[in-house]
Amino acid sequence: MLSGKILKANGWPEGKIIGLAKAAAERLERDGLAQDEVLARLAPVRLDPGAYLADPRFADLAREVIRWMAPLEAHDDTVALRERPSDYAIWGAEQIEPAAIRQMEQALRLPVAVAGALMPDAHPGYGLPIGGVLATHEAVIPYAVGVDIACRMRLSLYPVSPYLLGQRRNDFRRSLMERTRFGQRETWERRDLPDHPVLEDPAWQATRLLKSLQINASRQLGTSGSGNHFVEWGVFRLYADDAQLQLAAGEYLALLSHSGSRSVGFKIANTFTDVAARERVGLDGELRRLAWLALNSEAGQDYWFAMELAGRFASANHQVIHHRVAAALGMKEVASVENHHNFAQLETLANGEDAVVHRKGATPAEKGILGIIPGSMADAGYVVRGRGEAKALNSASHGAGRAMSRNTALRSITRRLRDQYLHERGVTLLGGGVDEAPQAYKDIENVITSQGDLVEVIGKFTPRIVRMADEPGDI
Image (cartoon, rainbow, N blue to C red):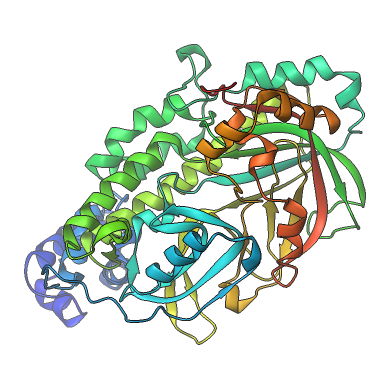
C-alpha cells in the first residue's frame, strides 16, 4: 500500500491532497499496477490537473490540486491599468473605425496584457473589438473569447461538377431547408435528434454547470444560430494542385457553414464573465467586460475546461450539419477545411514568452495551417494558408467585417436593394435579415489585400444558395 510518506517524497503536498492521492493510488493498485507505475500515473495529475477533471478516477484529486495551486490574490477595489497600451500591430487601419482602435488600446492597458494585434475586418465589439487578438500572461478573459465560444467555419468539397447547382437547384434548396435549423431557440424534434460521440464526452459530468448544459446540447447539435450564421452551397475554385488538401486544381461543388457552440457557449461565457467581474471589481465601465481569471485558479481551470468542451461541441455541430445536408443529395466529401475564430489558446510568442492568445473574431494563421475567410451572403470567401506572422500573433481576419452596425443597416438598406445585389450575382437567399445584407459589410477584396503578409490565398468560394435565419425587421 502506497503510504503518505512515499507520496510526500514524490512531491505531493501535505493536507487533503495526500488523502485523495492515497485513495486514487489504492484504486490503481487494485487494478494491478505496481507502486512505481502508480506513482507514474499520479504525477501528471499533480502537474496538469485541469486535464483530469473529466476522469472519474482522478477528478476529485485534480480539483484539490487546482485549489492548492491557486494563487492567493488580494482582491481590492482598484485595478492599476498601464498608462499606455502595450505595443500592437494593425492591418488595414484605413478600414477600421476609431472606436475599435480605442477598444483595442484600452484592452492593452490591462495589467495582464502582453501583446495584441488588430485585423483588417475589425469593428467595435463589447470589451475587445471584433477582429482583436489579445495575448495575456497567466490569465484568461472569458469575454475576450466571447459568448459564442469556438464559433467557426467549415468548408466541405465534393468531387462533382458545381454545374449540378443549376441542374438540380430545387434539390439543393430542399437540402438546406429540410436538413438545417436556424434561430436562437431552434432545436431538432425528438425523432430527428442527431447522434455524435461529443454527446458522450465525460467532460459533461465534470462540473455542475456542464451537467446542466448536456441536455440542451443534445437538442441543439446540428443547428445554427441567428445573425450572420449560415449554411450555403457554392462553387470552390482551387488555384493550384495542393498536397495538403490532396486535390488537383479546378472547380468543386462546396458546402460552407458558419456556426458556433449555441447555448452551451453562451451560458459558459456569461457564467464565468460574472465570476471574473466579481474578482475584478476595480475595473470600470466597458473594461469590466474584460475581467480576467488567473489561469491556474480553480475558476480559471474550470473555464478553460468548459471552453475546450464548447470547442469540441462546436466542431461536432458542423460535422452533423455537413453530413445531413450532403447526405440528402448523396454526396460524400473528399476534403474539408475548418477553423475557429472565437477561442483562447496557450501559445509561445516570438520573444519566447508563453501566453494565452485570445482571438475574438480572428482566424488562426500559423505557418502552413489552412483557414477560411468568408465575405458576405453574396460575396466571395477565400481559403487561405497561414504565413505565421509573429506581429499578428499568428492570426488573420475572420471575414470581411461589418461596415455598418445592424441598426444602421436596417435604417439605410431596403430589402429591394439587398435582393438586387443578390440577383446581380446569381445568389438565392433562403431566409436572412436585411441587417445581414452584403452592403452592410466591408469589401472582402480590400480586406484580403490588406493581409497579404498574413495569409496566402489558395482558393475562392462563390456562394450560390444561402440559408440563414429568418430575422425580424425586414422591410
